[in-house]
Length: 173
Image 1 (spheres, one colour):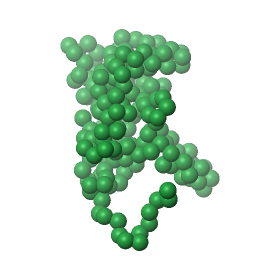
Image 2 (cartoon, one colour):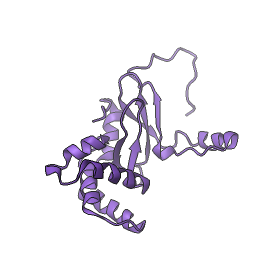
Image 3 (tube, one colour):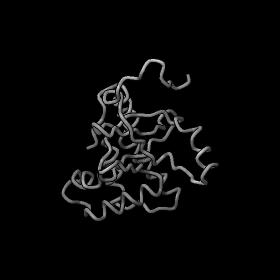
Image 4 (cartoon, one colour):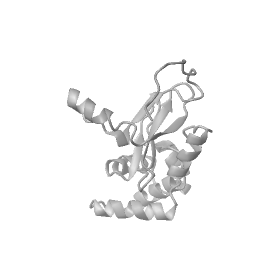
């Protein structure tokens, strides 16, 4: 499982992904049906595993958590890809690692971005509006459309980053 920072950001992140179990599965199933997707047993089982874990899981971890080999490992991979394409599951790619999945954080106050610390591997919560000004600037300059919801920003967490220098750049606000 992806390490999570022990700081307030990590605790907040786990709360954002605390999915509410069966309520989250029902919401995901409803979203699939609304998109015209069938709700098969493997899809439901994968959703239940993800709903039971606030962590970001690899496909292998999801497969390992499915009791009794109820769903074949290859089916787990295909199911996760389909659920991510449908927007029900968020897929995160971290440098040098396998793709990781969690139920999409939907609802007021649950939207957020992920930051990945390249030194310690922690994942931290970033405010959902952190790239609001960047997205249109990138598109205007290059024509490239950022998919912020599927993005993981790479850098150094507060524990690994050197302290800011006096008089250095500070974010507005």
